[in-house]
Length: 450
Image (tube, rainbow, N blue to C red; front, side):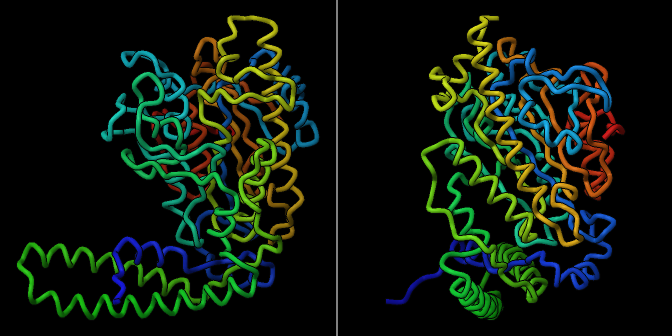
């Protein structure tokens, strides 16, 4: 029986055919090829950008640092980060004004998730007519993604949900996605570390992955030739409107062809580690495996932009491993109860430990210029709520880790004016990435103090 090749299958097949490692032996070639490329440090190494989201705000009394500038003291929650104090900066005073209720009423958890990387107000709907705005990671990916196999990488420890009602009439799409390609299109994250690994490097051992990549590339080239030739013959048989539709389709095919041509010299990198077995039952292990996948993606220059939703806002996960049996969301409505606040502080410290883990991984990876991966990265760690009992969207808990290739000023606590748009920080980060924007989301300018 003759097998039909659907357009969806064809496009998906084309999307996984190329790879670009970032090994030291390729640095001269890569540096020359990307001499005019954005997202490159002064040393010629790629510049990476990552966003890690933690849910349900924090116990603010245990979070806020003491003091300001370089002479500040970490509070209890950030104790696990003490060894990285010179590698990150803490911001106070940042706000997402579109997170507040206003005329939309309840739904602060959905708005916390939705606004954190977009600065836009989500349309309150549980239907398919969702509307938000492009996220900062996708704006960066649009600018630098052509230099890597994958424009961006989206990770989560939650399942994927893009429809249905989740929080007070808001679509689940707002609460389970950090990345938004456009105002109507979220980019679904992957929660299975093995599937992430296979997407990045293929299935099987290194030799098998290499052979399969070569076979896919040869097959895809022949498919493109067939589509082009067959389409030209079909063109004369169609009416004017259908000819226009076909021309639009061929334009898309030519774009794929251009991308394939651009990536002819790419090779699938060997990460040097085995694929994960699957999704761990233990939450800490799950987070760390996903962090490992993100670091591998950066290390092999498979992508330079990543988002990681550790848990969606409103998550009611319990933390029995650290002595917290109640659900996180349940505890977050603490009403100043000391016992609940103590348990929230434990959860906050748990998440800080996971940030310390990924920063340690990045600091221990030598980049292609001899510096550490952390030195050539910008990593945001944040929640879309501050005090969860108030559902407060101002004075958000925000850490910016990394040195941005020498462009950032870590090792300090930055106290900003009240209600400073968090998107002002993103404008500054985008500029460091080489994205020439003056505004983003609800920004009022660029935050100069990064």
